[in-house]
Structure formats: C-alpha cells, structure tokens
Image (cartoon, rainbow, N blue to C red; front, side, top):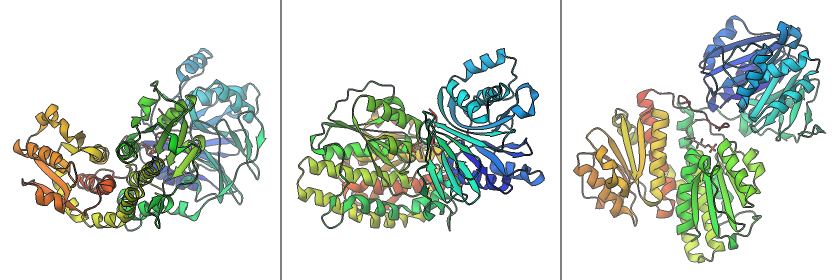
Length: 612
Ligand code: F6R
C-alpha cells in the first residue's frame, strides 16, 4: 500500500528519496513521485507505473533541493495516473508562499464533503484523489496567515478516516509528518532527519528510528525532530537503533524475493519454534500471559487473507488438541458483526505487518467488549502489537514478496505452540504434549526435505500454468491449506483457483470437473486419508486431472493413477498443515514464473493493506 518517505538533510535529496522509494516498492503501488524544495520553490517529478518510469524522468531533470518528500501510490480514489500521483500540490490564490505538497497513505472518508465545501470557495481541484482536500485545506490555512505547524494542525481537525501524511512547504525548509491510523516512523542520523512508512525505507538513511503514536505530529527542521502528541504536548521520541538485519533485504542468489522467502522457511520456522518451544521438555514455552490460560472458555481467532488461513488451521489444533471452543473469523467481517463474547474469552489477532486496517479495527471492536487480546505479528513495533494486551513475534524476518509465504508458516508454528500451551493449561497429558512437541521439533528438517521437490514441482507447474482454472481440495486441517494454495495461485499467476473441502465436491463443484481444470488434492496419510482419496477418485472418474500431493504411505495405498503425483516427506499429522504449505507455495511460484507474471509485486495488490 502507499509508501511515504521524507528527507531533510544537507545534501541534494532526489536520489536518496528515489532509493528509499525502492525500499518501499514491495508494498505494492501503481505510480510514484517526489517533491523537493529549493529557494522557496517546490519542484516535483511524478510518473505512472513502476519506479523505473520516475527514475527515467529524474535522469533528465532531478528536482533540486536538500529537503523533499516522496511517495509510492496504491490507487484508492482516482485511477493510477501521473496526474493522480503524489505529491499532491495546492497553492491557494496562485501565491507561491501558500504552496504545499502532500503525500498520503490512507483514506480521507469525508473527502467528498470537504471537496464540495472547498469548491464553494472557488478552489479548483486538479486530481481525482481524496488527498487533494488535505493539500487545499492546508494551503488555505497558510493563506489565512497560519504558520505551517498550525496550518497542518487545523487541517487534521477536519479530516475523518485513516492517514499517515508528510507535508512540504514552499515558505519554510520544514517537513511535517502526522499519523492517525496508518503507520509512520521518524528517523535520524548525522545531518539527516527523515520520515518513512516503515523501517525498511528508513534503514539506509537513519541510524535510529521512533514510531509515531496515534495522533502524533512531527516537525523535521534543524538538528532534531520535534514531536507532539495528540494533545499537542511536546514529547520525546522513543528512539530505537536500527538493527543491521533490517538492512538485509537483497534477493541473494534467488530470482525473486518470494523464492528466497520460500527457501528461508526451514530456518525461520526453526527460529520461531526456538522462541516458543522448550527443546528439553518438548513443551511450549511462553512468557507470562496477562490472562489465565486455564480458565479460558473460548478462543476467537481473526485475521485477513493468508493470515486468516493460518487461523483456520489453528482452529483445528485448538479444538482438537486443547479441547477449547474456537472460531476463526475474517477480520473485515468480524469488525461489523456483534459477536457474543465474554470476559473469559480470548481473542487472537494474526498479522504479518500488524498494520492491516481490518484486523486492527476488529481488535479495537473486541477491546470494547472487554475481551483480552493477543497479537501474533511479524513486526514487533506494529500498531497491532502495541495496541493488544500482549504480542508474540513470529521470527520470519522481513517478508518482501507481496504473496505471504514464510510469514504464514511461522504464524502456523507459533499458533501450533500456542495450541499446546492451551492444551497444557487444560490438563492434556504430558505424554501427548511431548508427542506434539517432538513433531514440531522435527519440522524444520521435514521442511528442508520438502524443498528438494523444487524441480519436480516446477515441471508440474509448467503444465498447470496453461490452465485457466484450478481447484484445490483438502480435508480437516488441510482444508485451510487448500484455501491458501488457491489464493497463492490466483494472486501471483492470475489463474482462477478455488479451495474446497473435499467433502463438498458432490454438493456442486463436481460439475466443474473436465479434462482442462487441474484439481490439486492435498492428501497426507492420516485419519482422513481415505476420505480425501475418495474425493480424488471421484474427480478422476469424471475425467478430471488430479495432482495428488501425499507421502509414501498415502501414495502406496492410493488405488488410481493421478496425472501428477508429488511425494512429500512423512510427518506427524499435527504438523502437516505447516509442511504442506511448501508444495502449494512452490506450485504457485513456478506457475507464475512460467506465465511470466510479476511474482513479487502482483498487479493490483499491496503488501500491507492499511486501508479498509
Ligand atoms: C496473501 C497475502 C495477504 C495477507 C493479508 C494480511 O499472500 O499476503 O492475503 O496475508 O493481506 O496481511 P497481514 O498478515 O499483514 O495482516
């Protein structure tokens, strides 16, 4: 989603702004731009499409100045175009001293009303964006004689919705940043102050960063940033040194970030298990919870997209292993429902970024019902982590590919450990817990083994990449993996795909089966193998083309001859949902490669969905 950068330094900033925007590319965008200030004049460069188009423009004319703001835009209001790209400029009365440039992440919900009001004052609008009302209001405030900080403060009072903003003024070598709902961080190093949507953008520029809290405003001018809280009080930034690992975002030997991230899974799942599993006692090991795990009556899990599918798998574990009532809810639905919740319930929100707007709002809604909240995040400083009573960190490291891979498996690993913790608190025997714990301990090795299927998956993906539709089937805790497999395929290869519980085939989807649509059947050996194997047979009996993904035992007992088979390493049923994530990720990855799509930045998608 939109990325923001601002730099105030003693050197020309256009190149540094562009470099920082490159760090933000992974968030997904469809146009980009920057504005700089030199001798009380704002200079801009904007381009539709990838940053290469903006870079090309900068080669012929780099905007001059040592202070500037930059933006990657993921269109919400107004189509992607150069005209709608940020920074958005306003200059009330055509007077250059009133000029202001604004970059924005979020949505101004009352923009239509504000636009009508401003149009009545004969202000002309030049873009279709909601952002332009922010620029116009601020310029109007400057024209009324307010200095920049007051002009911004007055503008913010008029805005409804979520935003992170950076303003650049013609009259003053100052950048102002503001946050309400969308993340923004301030950074500093020798002679440089900066703002950025995330640590990745700031890592090459700043040695230390501080995240803005809700309602904060920051002023970049002089040697140090001045920070004000929502009450207007001057406060001290809570500086944190940037760790060297936050700089390591190269692709290394891999062709794509997604491929690299798939390959990192044995290591990062291992690190996540190291944090939440005691290897000596084979028991889950968590810091003290701010709620009593032994007296919980119900667990509500909620998330969006891939993270939601992790919660669906966890629902099987929490019910099946810990014996606790549990439901998994899509956050964008949950936030508008009125779920029956009580003080002995726990709500767990799962999010790689910790900034997904629907997940945040669902968590806020649940807080109003007085329920304890636990965040499972990959970004420890994220809004979700900070707002929930407790947060637990997956150890995936920076995930750059828009399609989530290692975040998903680390979420599963953490939630698996959490299910064991709930089981322990619920009195499940040590012997059973140790069996589950030992299955988790072995998981990183099984993940390594699964990666050796790479070439075979690539060959199968070459066939599947020619299909227009695909179906994924699973049962039990493999059903969410079927959903995840279908999501991965559609988002990066643009092949239409659906995930279904195998038992539902006869209730409709069987009508789709023909000799063109591949049906990917996730069928590890275990209690439900016979059931899913029958579903695969039913597809094949109707001329369907099946890819059977199973282990040696499953394949040996399967009667028919599927068009393709993948033999997975054997593992305990408990960890199958984690292990089987790898072949579905690799299948989607190679199908996308064969089709030549933009694997790391699929069209129309954003990495972190910070608007509703
Ligand atoms: C799909 C994908 C998305 C995210 C979803 C939630 O590959 O990455 O579906 O899982 O947008 O994002 P987070 O986990 O950041 O809340």
